[in-house]
Image (cartoon, one colour):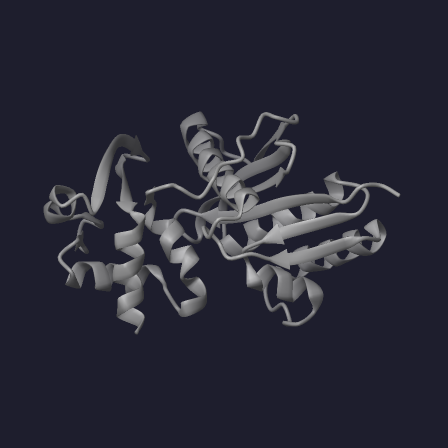
Length: 230
C-alpha cells in the first residue's frame, strides 16, 4: 500500500475579486501554484484542491483553511457559484479513490498552510511583476518550497481579513474599524502616519500596481479587528 501524502492548499485574491493565486504544498517541499486575474478567493481555494487531487496519486490528505471549499465539495453546503469547478473536484476525487479533506485554521501554526499561503502571496507578486495577461502556473520539485513555522510577526490586511472571514470580517468592516481607531485612512486606503509611527503598520518600500505595499503587526491587527466583533 502506498504511503499517505499530506498537502496543504490555499487560495486568495488581493483584492477580492481581483488578482488571485492558488497553491499546493507537500510535506517534502514540492508543490504547484498559479495566478490569474478576475477571480475570487473561493475559486482559488477550490482550484488548489482540484490540482492537489490531480497531481498527487495514492492515499491523499488535503489540508485547507477554507470551510467553504471543503463543505461544497463534501456536499454539506450546496454550491451556488463555482458549480462547474465543484463538479470537477467531485469527479476527480471519485476517480482518485482515497482523498481526505481536513480543515485547518488559517495562520494558526499548521506549517503546510503557512507555506501554501506564502506561496500564494509570492505568486500574486510574480504575476503582477511579470506583466502576465493570462493564467500562469509554476511547479516546484521536492525541497524547493520552504516549510515555514508560525512565527511571522507581520501580515497583510488581506490575510487578516481572510483569517477572520468566518466571523464576518470584510474589507468594508476592516476599513471602518481601523479608521475609527485612527490607524487607517479610509479615503486613501493606506495606514495613517500614527499607525506607521506606532509600528502598527510598516511601509515595506515596495510598490505594486502603482500603490505602496504595507504590512501590519499581526497581533495588534487581529486584536483590533476581533474586538470590533465582540
